[in-house]
Length: 311
Image (cartoon, rainbow, N blue to C red; front, side):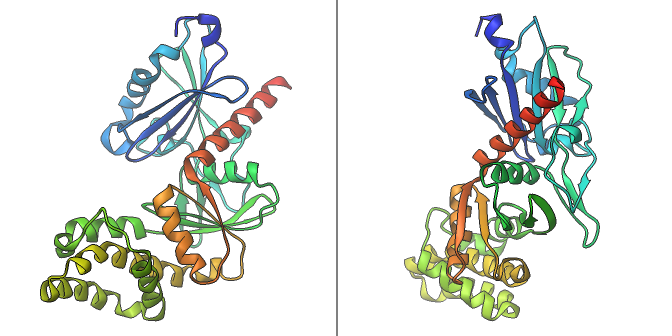
């Protein structure tokens, strides 16, 4: 883009995770002009590299005539990130204009603002990035009252009432799944491209009825693969492991989801698994795309900042 007048009307939304960075270029009406994705997540760079990595991606959209506003959520606001944005504490509304923190950048062409995460003192818990997804979801679903499940590496269950985040809990189900399927003895018995919904749902039920037998069920998968040498058994193991882990999570999270309205916000594959698991327990679920909710949340923060500036 070479037209400086067009550039000065744009702003940038960024979601900086542990593994990746996503950036959207938007006009003043919130229309997406361009989208970037990079693997320069927080785990791969040091705190002094955030600005240079960001500039490398968005260079062609910056103007020399006026600074471009950047609204960023996620791990950029952590202690190891670009600039630490102190947590809000539940109960609280999702972050808006008064909560963002300005980053002091070396390059004058960008004005960077970071959306803070949210913490819970007792029982101790934290989130960074999910609060922006929740804000986006509530922007689009203004009357929602219930539980928002955000599946991923660290799955969140968040109680929302009257547009306020009341409490939440985090489960390391996704990380445990990755460790077991890729680094344990079971890695030799996993087909990461296969999926069997029937096996998955039966495994969810098995784990919910006998969660204490989880470790036994794991080695049984290994032994069965060796004894039967069945291709079907090999194909089913990934679904079996996923079902067992999510089933145990549902047992522990039952005080959150039982009798509540449930929304699942996540990437398609993992969100579909959680939705099927909950529906298998007779729970109706509203499904939403996590990336869209993140963008809607960042757009909502930008609008609230624009309103503040206009006062």
